[in-house]
Length: 119
Image (tube, rainbow, N blue to C red; front, side, top):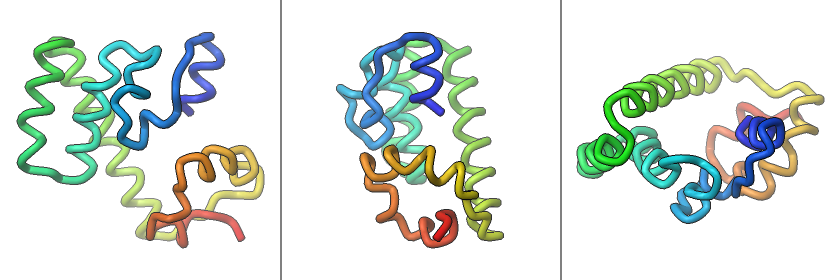
């Protein structure tokens, strides 16, 4: 979705930012590095890094961006857990459209991939 959104808005991005590369995350996305680091801490439930990344995002982006980012992160966590728990597979169309991104980011290496990809 990030790639499609960037194409629609004609914004240059580097998709590797979603995989933990701060320089890639900063390309074309305001507060991108801080957003990525906060999201990583939330997704990994990293209790040591979460306060630090939350404060860094607050310092550069302000409270509105922090609250929005926390809401988005919580929503994604909810959706992923529901999908993983009931084993919702991608349909063939979605699988074909996302193949390049999955390969580029090595998403098939995650344990949950066995539940989400069409065969």
